[in-house]
Image (cartoon, rainbow, N blue to C red; front, top):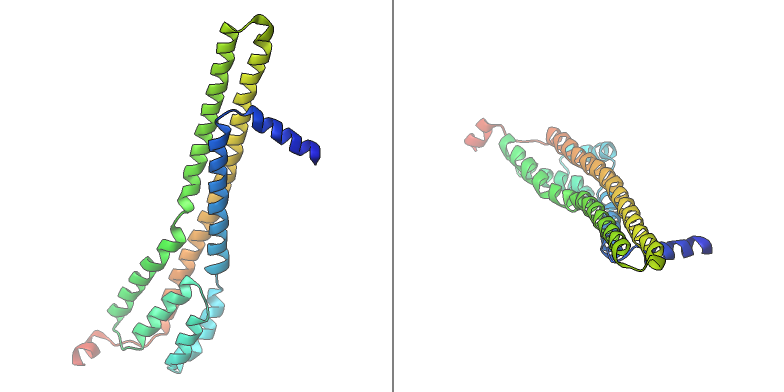
Length: 219
């Protein structure tokens, strides 16, 4: 373990100036990933089928308060969409009112789920480009050394420049791969949650009582 840490320290020292912005990108990627994992997996997920099975009896017996309390007990976007539909349905809304509520609720709840995930893809590209810049910087140093330094120091300067180039490239690629893998995972979970929200909205819509257009006009 100690030897591994020492080798990491040597690679860091050999990476040159571009190793620092790559490290900043790594910290940002890790921070966004942790926040998205907590939000998407811990705060936004729920079992849609179980939720509908427990909500439908309250709607069937027109127990407005029980239905709202059950929706409030689950801190997930799909549950908030269901609550908005229950409020609209029990206020004698028409089918058009219900459909409008679905659209607005989906738009409102989709934004927090989708935000920041796309940054991971951007950070992966930045890490790759910074690694390339570090590579170019190291090669420039190597060729400059070959042309100007004393022959006795030439091998050391060449080795230092090549080491800078390779370490920056390696670190940039590691950060980029990590960011892309996390982006793929978060994107998949995001799409799964959006599908769950739509499924919940349509399931609750089918359970709700609503006025037909003729009934609304008569009222």
